[in-house]
Image 1 (tube, rainbow, N blue to C red):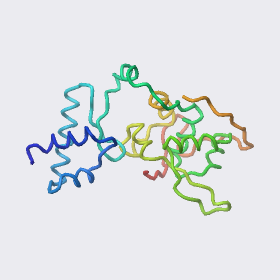
Image 2 (cartoon, rainbow, N blue to C red; image 1 turned 60 degrees about the vertical axis):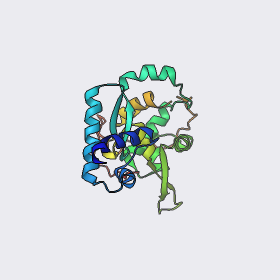
Image 3 (cartoon, one colour; image 1 turned 90 degrees about the horizontal axis):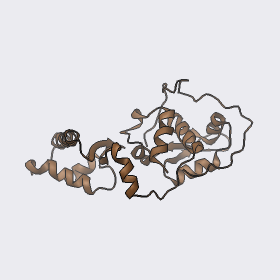
Image 4 (cartoon, one colour; image 1 turned 90 degrees about the vertical axis):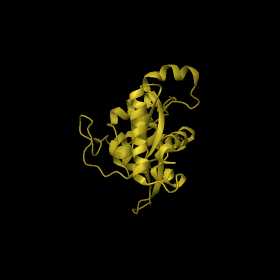
Length: 212
């Protein structure tokens, strides 16, 4: 099977609906060495990059997945009409805060934004972009939020180490996620604070991020 390994992997990736991890591929390709599978994947990545066609193979959300070339998005959107409403500016802002400060509780999110964010958080959970990790052991035991694997897929990230700046998250979100009308937000008493772990120019600081 060694001579066909690359093309077997190519076919598996083609039919998979979500990124395939190395462990998943090893489970299907019984008896194949990890090094051989990795070499085949690297060869496929190089093949598609060299071909410069409509598809590329990328590491996304801890696995491998075929992606369409970004420069063809205009035509793809003409064929495939998005069903989900776009995320509002408030939702993208909240998503960026959670991504850079996770694990984080709602009160901390609202302190940074300066507005009530309950509705936005619910919507982000419905879109499977954030999840509940558990409860923080403080009075009231508030829920703790973090981003999901789907978040990594949407933003084409291998893991949270590749996290873009908050501004880039908002810009990428505008093009990759579909816009609903901003929800009414209630101004809180807390003054908006600078985003922890992020410098004024939007660069990430030293923030502990848990992979989802």
